[in-house]
Amino acid sequence: MAERDPSGDEEGPWRFGSFGPASEEPYRRRPSDYVRLVVAVTLIAITSLHEGHATQSERALFEFFNGFPDDLRGIFSALSGVGVLWPIALFAVAAFVAHRRRLARDLAIAAAGAWVVGRILGAVVTEHATLGAGIKVFTRLHESPSFPYVPLAVITAVICAAAPYVMRPVRRGGQIVVLVLALAALYLGTSFPNGVVAAVALGWGVAAGVHLIFGSPGGRPTRQQVRAALAELGLPIRDVQLAPYVRQDGTVMWAHDDGGRVAIRVLGRDEADAQLLSKFWRLVLYKDGGPELHLTRLEDVEQEAFALLLAERAGAFVPSVLVVGTAGRGTALLATRALEGVPLAQLRASEVTDGTLREVWHNIAVLHDAGVTHGRLNAHHVLLTDCGPEIVDFADASSRHSDTRRQGDVAEFLVSSATIVGEGRAVSCALHVLGADELASSLPYLQTPALSREMQRHLPRERRALRDVMATLRAEVAHATGAEAPQLQQLHRVDASGLLMAIGSLIAIAVLFSQIGDPAAFWNTVAS
Image (cartoon, rainbow, N blue to C red; front, side):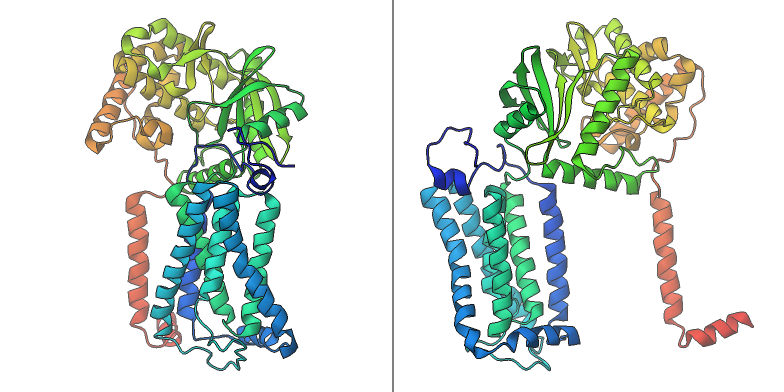
């Protein structure tokens, strides 16, 4: 049964039965849409280059469906008509019945975009390609096969553009319509398999582009879904609302129960996609690999909960875990006790005492003694409460022992605190708690690649200014600990000079082999 929209609209079953709330506003650009757009462009490029060069399997597939008896023409023609009516009905219901003006706009733009791009693509590609080479075609609608099959592209674009807004049965119905129309195009002779694939890719890509331009709601659970999921997990809550800040590693909501305020980190489809891509990219670029790679949403929230439990048991001041698990429509949640406080990053230097910074460093030391590293340990994740400074947001935390991650934590908070109180006070407070040896071990990591992307956004944008800040901080640490500033740790798997050398070597080898007429003769020459 569809859930009620939090806005409280009274539009009846049409709105909530088909266009129920897929997620909470504000709408956003989803990481999965970037992937869809890249895949679609790649497929369109491949099919465009392949047009006019049908393989034997393509001929066999086309001739199989195109060779069905003529008696089926009425059925397939009717199915095509129903398929054309589907996006029209979707637009009409969205615009005039459900009053989803935003959705109607996206559907109209997706349809127009697919039609225009399809016509242009067809004009460019078919000018240089021989259609139907070697294929016997029955054109039952008196239309020659086209590339791409524009009606299918338009319908696919509309259905894919509507997907984040509609309920699952409507999405499944749209996918069936696309499949039926693709088979009908082969039977009626209006497109070859290559044109069908290009049309589906074009519609898919145009819809992804529309979502990237205007944003879309898919993947983020609603407040009603979160309330129901936590009730299923045994934590009844009330007054659920979105947190006033947006995070890429999950949707944060606040609520209340009988014990006070509750912070809820929710992982929907988009958050899982974003984290998987981000962690995979960091795994490719950096030797340490960054946060652990989780294949499921449940693994992700369980890892954070486990790190919090280890830290709390060791005596670190961190949020208490209330419940963790999955419930409802596959939503993964972690609920923790949320105290009232002010982020350290929002304070000025005069408002931050040395005692406060030492308490934070003591918390960090306890955290590391428990074998837990934070991953983004900067002033934005330190909350000053009435009970003292609390370290929060353990989404990138790890419980595996890693000197690199531990020293990265020290380096990040040292840089972060230095941007608030200055290099001298920041280094003095860290030295007082950690000692000279531990602080000196962070010297090789006082560099930009060792910091989280969040921290890098708050540093000077100019390369020279950033280099000067890091150099000053390294000099302060070296002077305070009596250590010599070591060579910076190489954190990337491949540095720029090594990458250029590898590319240059490959080019040189390619040029060398291009000068060789017979590889066998070349090998015999080398062997002798």
